Length: 237
Image (cartoon, rainbow, N blue to C red; front, side):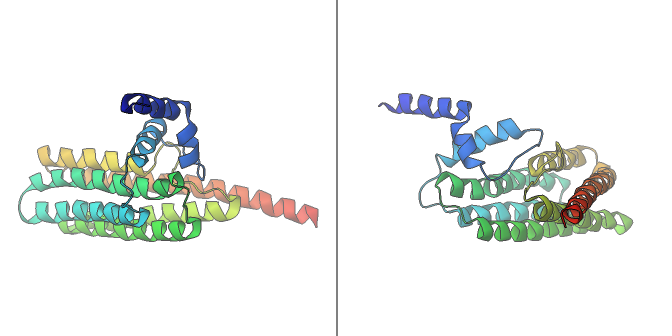
């Protein structure tokens, strides 16, 4: 079989969902760019060199978060143009964070509990570091939005863990908004800040408020589900 025919077969398999089902067998996604993201990830995992491990991809994703935080700090001390470096950081973060677990499933070597624990830990540290970078960039009362972002994103992670405990279903999305969409939104805001100084401070407040609303809605849904389960268990006694 020629390389061209092999490539066509691989693409056909992707479009038919064969590889996608295998790579994403452990989670259901609801985010806006779900289809495009799944096709891209499924295409990429087939081309990752054998020496690249899931742990290395996790480290690469974390490095991307460091770049984002660094872009805020550099912009604070030198020039707002350094915020554009954050776009590269988000791309690296997406690459590592999105592919680490998917690569393990593609290679049929998933470590579900280890991967789950590592992913949650690294994500939280990464969010904390990005929030710190924003705090360095912001001034006075605007710094509070950095704290707010860390707290709200942490709350979202807690909601995901509670959902997993109650329903047995782990989801990293809040409706149409997932980590990829969050990266895109923040990336756009950082670009806007370069050309419209001060806009980031106001939009950061909007993001924190939006995360608060989403978290309240998701938490209320989970409480209703948990209450229904408790009632059913009482009836069965």
